[in-house]
Length: 203
Image 1 (cartoon, rainbow, N blue to C red):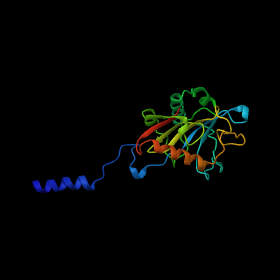
Image 2: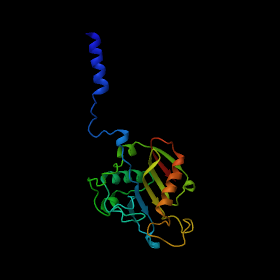
Image 3: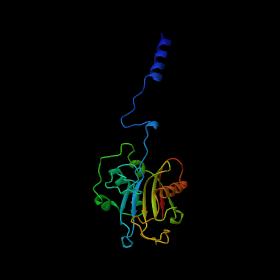
Image 4: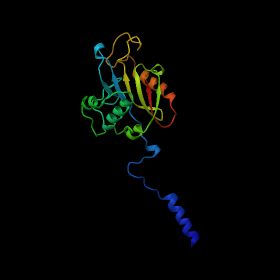
């Protein structure tokens, strides 16, 4: 009788699935993140003083095949992430982000992507490097999760066109394709460990 009970317990452990808590996902269920961020430029040279972008796939309806599609409305977590990271580099972004282009929304419209991991960002470790070590001119901060760039801040107001390797001004303050920009973010992540959430800051 005792042996029968042991066999029954083993069957219950290995055969009957244990339900996951609501909101918990397995590794196979994990979705990718969307890289998002802001470009800050000098309006005097023809740049947009403030441009939030969300790097959706080119074929996405909201992207319209643009290299750096404008984020017409930030999600609340994107908003909070950018405010938090901005404070780390001395930027007070709250008022501007709240009013432009629209108020942040609690609705997440990208079901194929994971929402930004806000709590992980707020508890992330920080590494600071000299600006001269940045692979992208004007790159101030990047948040990485397992070396994937979640969000960034680029500020080119203090750089000349020559320092940016540019012959003419652009609305985003840089003259590079999305692929080159992402390659730069990928080169920068060599300064942090492969795992974990990190904020890389270029002073």
